[in-house]
Each structure stands twice: as C-alpha cells, then as structure tokens.
Image (cartoon, rainbow, N blue to C red):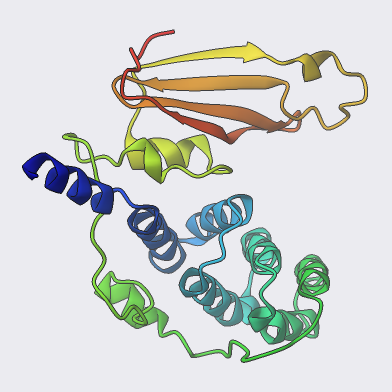
Length: 247
C-alpha cells in the first residue's frame, strides 16, 4: 500500500498539466521580463510547439498591442513572430487584436504577418481579446502567470540538480530551450538522414539529426529546421530510465 501511494504521488508530480505549467510560465516570463530578443524566442517556441494555452496567448496578444504602435525596425521581426504564434493558435479570440495591427500604419512586414494570421483564424467569433485585459506590469512584478489561475499549481518533478525531467520537453522546442529547462546532456551524437541526398528537399530540412543523451532519463532527438538556419528543434523525446548516457 505504501509503495502504491508513492507511485501515485510521483504520477501527480510529473503529470503533463504540471509540466506544461512550468513551460508556460517560462514563456510568460520571457514575454514580460525580457527584451525583444526574449519576446522573439518565446513567440517562436509558442509557434513551433503549437501551444494553445490562452493564458500565455493573452500575454502575447497584450505585448503585441502595446508594442506595435511604437515599434522600431528591430522590433518588427519579434512582433511578426507574435502574430504567427497567435494565428497558429487557430483561436478566433485574437482576431480583433491582429486586425488592429493589420489596419494600422505599422511596417508593411508586420501588417503582412498580421494579415496571414487573420487568414488562419478565419474570422472573429466569441469573446475577443482587448488591450488592457492583462496588466503586464503586474505580471512582471508578481512573477506569476496572468493572474487568472484559480488554483495553485504543483511543480513538475525535477532532478536532484534542480533541472526538470524529460517529460517537460515538447516537440518543436529549440535546443537552447531544452538545455535551459533540463540541463546539458551526458553525451551527444549526430548523423545524416536520407533527406540529405534527396534533390527535391529544396529547403534542406531534416538532413541532420542530433541526439542528446541523458543518463538515467532518456534521449532527445533534434532535427535541423532548414539549410538556411543553424537552429535545431525537438523531433522526438524518448524517456528511458535505463539510458546509459553514452552513444
């Protein structure tokens, strides 16, 4: 009975909901506490992981609405990624916010991505997000989520080093993000794929895969996004408590 109780408690600690809470909090911190580089990184991860959490997306929408009117040239690319993240959510709640950017006097590039995001949403329906719904100053100072969470979250399970376990890793995360969440691997190996010899793979995506091995945890498989970028993103997570940590 005691053993069963321990197993149940561990199951609660490493539940997907709790793991998601840690990741989502990281995105909110990046959006509210960092500069535009952090905003871009958060938006890219939100987009690539297909995140649908409205608490995180509401914060992203507020950042977009507050920053686009006075956006400088360097701000445009990060805000364009925010538009892409909101559009990829397929949540019509953000139609009005994106439409405001689309109809503004902002840069042509930002308006283009806002328009593309609008096409992904299809139209406005239901309650729309409006500027000021989220108080970014409060979120920034409190260190909490958007303030809408009704119950306290149980922290996701972590290793003795304080880093999170592999269950927190999502497909589409960047390698840098994974390392910041779970630490550096015991060892790394890589190999080319058959796509490296495919003449029709014009973008050069998934021609190289790199594998981070974590002793006693498992493996995280990364793939290159394209030939035009050195970035690697998570393709697969293999949880294996018997992982040796070596190729």
